[in-house]
Amino acid sequence: MTRFAPSPTGHLHLGHAHSALFAFRAARRTGGRFLLRIEDIDPVRCRPEFAAGIAEDLAWLGLDWEEPVRRQSDHFADYRAALDRLAEAGLLYPCFCTRAEIQAEIARAGHAPHGPDGPVYPGRCRSLPPAERALRIAAGQPFALRLAVDEAARRAGPLTWHDRVRGRQTARPDLFGDVVLARKDTPASYHLAVTVDDALQGVTLVTRGEDLFAATHLHRLLQAALGLPTPDYHHHRLLTDDAGRRLAKRDRALTLRALREAGRSAEEVRALAGFQGSELRLRNG
Ligand code: GLU
Image (cartoon, rainbow, N blue to C red):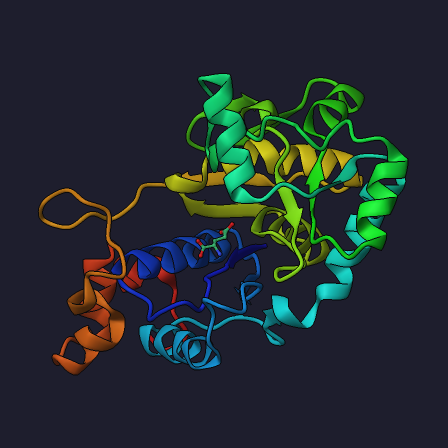
């Protein structure tokens, strides 16, 4: 089972089409199932009209997927349950640092390792005494929940996963440092929600762009800490524009709707995204 898991923060462009068709073809080739998942945990950036647009664009492209479509914003209880498990295992801690405080601490230290998601958290709140944590929470100080990555990795022991392009990988979750898994305004981070969902939905092959390759190091650790199965991974190439830059929201002319409105057929757009209809075994194609 594969999935395409876009965030509804804008309209799909050719790069998304490549990713969706890639996952779809991988399922079709093996007689497997294909899911669409809407990753809308960030209430500030995600909009329902973009989610509706995604379904419309994918259907126009010739794809079909299993219903019901999972929308992450409907499942905060699942992410909460995962956080509770990590907390019970002693692998989560509240972090009261503001962004400015973290930056100041990094500046004081003179350097900070840079992880896949940005500077690695220096760990200021990791060793706060329990009584102080309780006092601050009782006083209503806002906090984020961070994963104690070193401790989780120590308990899990060496972890590997299989990438279909690069082969067997040894997980390096330490590259991230203690990541935030939840905040007041975003009750689950991308890393937590995606790991929980792929397991809950029974996804056996995660296909996604190379830009998310490093994230898998951390997802593998979360799987171990939560006792979840590890799927296979295939991180695929990213489509680029004529200047070699990866496609992004600024490339408005390359959204599927702009291409459709400009008179391109679904078949032409599939070809632009790197796929021929015949290899996709489309229902109507
Ligand atoms: N929602 C993520 C994105 O739009 C992709 C998640 C994934 O495939 O793991 O970039």
